[in-house]
Image 1 (cartoon, rainbow, N blue to C red):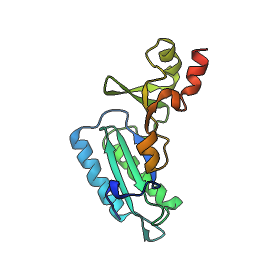
Image 2: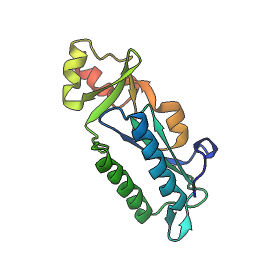
Image 3: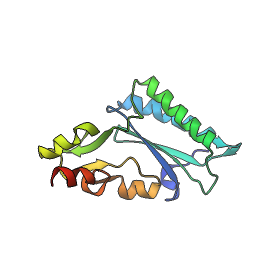
Amino acid sequence: MYINFNELPNNSRVWIYQADRDLSKEECTSIDVALLQFTSAWEAHQHPLQASFQVLYHRFICLAVDGSYHEPSGCSIDKSVAIIRQIEQMFDLKLFDRLTVAYLENGNIKTLKNKDIRQKIASGEFSPETIIFNNIVQTKEELDRNWKIAASQSWLSKYFETVMA
């Protein structure tokens, strides 16, 4: 059953899917409709899941479940992946590319392929203070506190140690 995202407890499980481009207002509206329909009927072993979603910055889809109400099962998680894949196909998006990092530059969201990180750091275009989107957060609380963080505070810190050494 759908619940407003702000009403979910902080320990709710989240999944973030990063689009390979900005979504138009119309695309965001269509995604909202599809995910509202999905979360309203989403269940695990015939038990309704208390779930919600947000489209953030016209770039990220965040799906969330309150596991204290009822835990999602493997099959229910598979169903969530299926709806995200449908959205991916409907709008010709890539939402499962984990080899690209999104970051803020002058208030705009940019992306960088992991293979290009060392070069960007060496050239000074990407610094330890660059704000990145940490899409591996797992709870709503982590989303609120650790989703937008300095690159040096993320898994990217290893690149600064090796490139700047």
